[in-house]
Image (cartoon, rainbow, N blue to C red; front, side):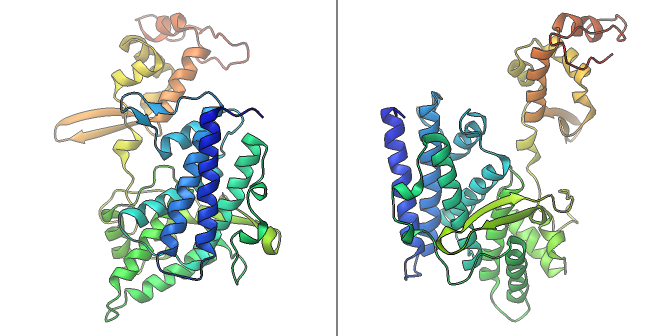
Length: 366
């Protein structure tokens, strides 16, 4: 494969950071070890994603800022890039590593050795998969197998490790222990791992406070961290050939709440999820405001979640739309005849007018 110069440089940086992460993992010194591992792993994947994007002719510079895009933007583009096509499970693993790195870099957290090994091993597996998928190379081409992450105990089930951490947090928060700081450090790590299941999960001080109170109130792990019940780990191989892939395994259904009485459940940033007012939604779909309203009506986007949320501030109501609504609108513009949509929904004519569709296999709505 003929690599572009920038892609070659970025891939080289990615491999160098992965080497450094593996050296840190195998270090006999504990001082700063977890921090070094997480920083290096996150950097390795950001460089590898950007190398893939550059090689795929995708712009990786933000013109408004004059510098390269960040980790999350690179990840989202990586999910769309032909030849890379990150799966939701792969994106979840990367987001969890990034969230853990963020806590280590900007505050502090405590990741148990079992969970650190599971994520480090999953990172090695995923890095190797992506390197092969995009560049037809294997990680073993760049380093001897003996330096891949090893542990004196085999990788354990994700939920077993989470439950073990949860029990330790309960013990640390018992009256008289004077170990609240250590407990909250572990809480931040578990909150960061919700990124496996929720792309918009972020760790905040209010989350930590809410979860801590829920534990003090006797809430179970399923109640406090419902999203983690949907995460599991697929482990194959033995010894140095172990492969770990962290996946969403279905799990129990869960919901988030912003009810202040639901102290155990973390709050979703709804303003981030529903970020687009009506005018911006129309602009992203390439429509005028009236035609956008007609298409919204036809698609049923004003019926509520997951497309619409109405924010109430005093006497004012502000409808905002989600990224899913944007995608639905853009698909609708390509799928339907907008003149027919306008005749059906944009005027006083009967809405029962049969709508023409530009694709023969699309489902027409009255």
